[in-house]
Image (cartoon, rainbow, N blue to C red; front, side, top):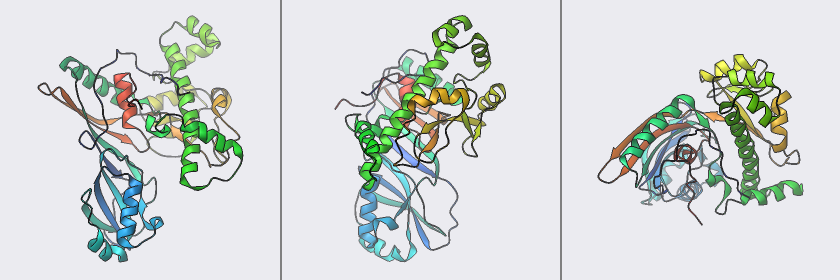
Amino acid sequence: MNHIKIYAYNHSPIPFNFRQTIERFFVEEIPMYPFSHSGNYLILKVQKQDMSTWKLISVLAKATELSERDIGYAGLKDKSATTIQYFSIPKNAERLLNKNLTTERVQILERTYHKSPIKVGHLKGNKFSIVLHNIEEKDAKFFNTTAKKMQKEGIPNYYGYQRFGEDSRSYMQGKEIAHSGKRLKGSKEKLLVAAYQSHLYNKWLGERVKLSTIIASNTHEQASKKLGYPLKLISVLAKQKMFFKLFLGDIVTPYPYGKMKYVKDMTFSSALFEQQKISPTGLLCGAKVDRSASDAYYLEEPYDDTELNALKGDRRFAWIWPKEVETKYNPDSKKLTVDFYLPKGSYATTFLEEIGKFSLKEKV
């Protein structure tokens, strides 16, 4: 079953109305690197509305008479949004593109050239601008204060509800496919197994948030009793200034990217974590991925499905810091516009849910 999300912050819920539509949800990709302005690939900065990334790839392929494999893109974006994304196509297909691309839902904002195609993951992050409705002035002020606090202290990097399909249960199909031992057929099966991976990761992250909350909100003795940990360990964990507690054997990565390392000294690593220099990672289990060690693996193991070998596996930042957070409130319409930046792979809805303290998923 879909589990209730465990929030890291303990403020009261903030009521607002969220709907993901082309008028209320804007997202723009921030490329990983500047383009060279010369080379064999045409780079398109494209604005699309009411169209999934897959659909746009097929529209571009049709217009240029290319295979969909020849269309480079950095990440997938939702259909129900106004999105700005980057795509690459071989330069020699530009003439056909000019002649055949006619859809009104797609606007080419800029063109340039680069020496290599865009590949999945080739982006730093995304800028969001989201309009929330029916929010009272006092709640809008509290929203702003809370969002700015999260910019300093960070948030848990849960996968958003979008990852788990319409009924939030696609991970169950993914588990069946993963355990069948067969090779994955096509992108649909891959997505379902990835949803199962993400489900296990979210469960692990929820447990770590819960554990950190127990340490933050109890005396050392109470926390020791509730968690069944030695008092000595609790006092070391409680000294860490960050809410999310690091354990020996956790795998941390320089933030926002760099080479992974194991935590050998909790106090030292926690100081770097507080300075936003490193962040702990959670497991996306698979055939070729580093597992955490020592105490951290004891916490990770219940969410490590060693039968999931159909995907390579990866590690994902467990804690991220929203940036460039700004809010603008209109008291007449009771609308709040929230602008912010998140690193790639992070969900805007996860940030908003951590502030609002309720699920943004519309009831099916």
